[in-house]
Image (cartoon, rainbow, N blue to C red; front, side, top):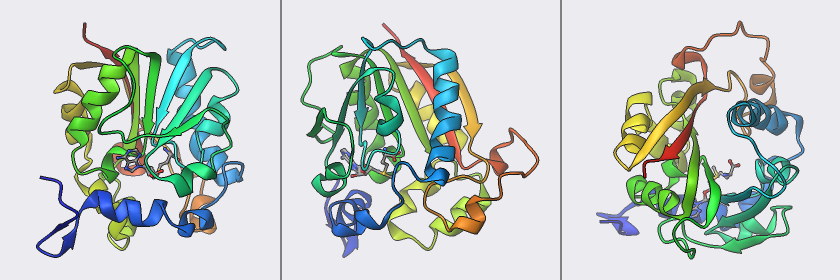
Length: 230
Ligand SMILES: C[S@@+](CC[C@H](N)C(=O)[O-])C[C@H]1O[C@@H](n2cnc3c(N)ncnc32)[C@H](O)[C@@H]1O
């Protein structure tokens, strides 16, 4: 059941919608802000290390929002970006874009070489349904990034932001089960992004020299590069 309001409590998806379909989305940092660049770069480096792209590689980015990843992805592949919320998509710099609900994507099966979805699953009421859709429209790879709730700093911050409450269940185990339970095989998995997350206050984001660790507790996100099980 995915009602807008259940016993007067707003659904996860409608909370996200209230924010990303309003002018408030314009207050977020822009795609070329140095903190956003740092947030994106370590994930894109990991992706490019594991998958070969050319300008002909057909990539779909679902829930692309204001373009944090899209801006950089458009440099090395044939990119189409989608989002359910018009206000945020208007800020996305990529030319090929369309409004689409991740729960029901308007594409045929196997339409894209790679389907990417970053920081979206924790904003939807039924992440499993969305993972199935991403898998359906992909010919080979699905790449997912989600917050890592084992990082207590992140979880503590997000307790104060109701639209982010969906991330609390995103432990490494939950995320991996969500992928593997939906006909995808994890090729590579990594805890990424030490103290860089795009929209927390600057002094926090600048603590980049923290000793490197690959432990879940010190990284803000998890990234999974997955392949379709035929
Ligand atoms: C945290 S933002 C992430 C944006 C972008 N992927 C990034 O990493 O910067 C979450 C995005 O998910 C989008 N979204 C939420 N529910 C969605 C749905 N059902 N279908 C498509 N996009 C959705 C929001 O509009 C928003 O742009």
